[in-house]
Image (cartoon, rainbow, N blue to C red; front, top):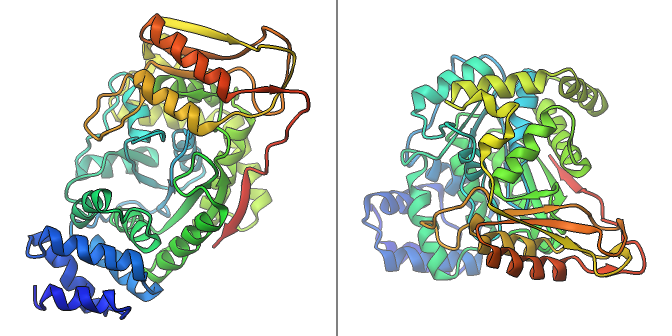
Length: 436
């Protein structure tokens, strides 16, 4: 490092604003190791306590992006727009959204993550598709993108390497929930994809990364401002995660729901969030200025089979077995499926997404630690949602488990997470706010 790190740590500790050059110096030390672990932890804590200005956060984002390889897709003439979600329970939107907007003429270079804790990850869902490869080289990623309009890959160690060390240190130093650090972590990797624009799906509610509306809104506004300052087009939606998205929770079960949705059999909330984000992507791409016209165009592409065609093309290009489109049994199945009967007649008074997400993890369908293996076949499928009328003994949900004991234990918890009351309850709007 050019400057002594203790001086820069103290400057931020005392509420000072770091210059872009000072931030680049710090990030250089993160990558080459000249900034020690204790020093990195101290600086992250100073940022967490003192915050960062928009200019500092933009400089941090660009320094982290430039710490590794920055992809370019000059061979792709389409506008390159990606989408990123802050994560939730049942969120399989990317698997439908990417081929849908690709069918409309957008290129979607999507680098996705794995699930951790109660939230699912796109890569884990894709891993349940027989043969599907996400470990693409940069060259193969570019080829797939050019041929079918979207590519979905795991993050490479070459992309924003500073973030890997910073994220690991944040995880053990109590500095995870810092808006500037979250913003730079997300955007540094996305900017390195070689995109022209990004649509953010920021979740709020019980199963969201930042449950309170106020905190989620703060993050949404930071992402939009910093992304724009870094030179890309930005839009963001604040969406509800106080209820699972869709009916299937668990990797192969969610993919089965996606495959049915390709042919129009899609839960209403999953469809609505997918279309809302798709409209934003078409508008950022400059392909449709009017939101109503953009939505009509996407609905037509979904209805006429274009969505299914592009999904199938990508499936083949990334090594997947196309027979799975018509034979969902190729996804595998858990050996024990238990139906959960309603204890009485009434209305579904709640569907707790956080508890249901934890049930899926405890069945083996998620991770507590990054190295944990995931069982793709297990999970929960809802038969009723918030506000639905239910008769006594009518199924509320199905549990898919590896053993009878695990199924019965999960069923008791699902029953608690889905109480039956006397009056119907209404879900709040799916899209709560927009920025961009």
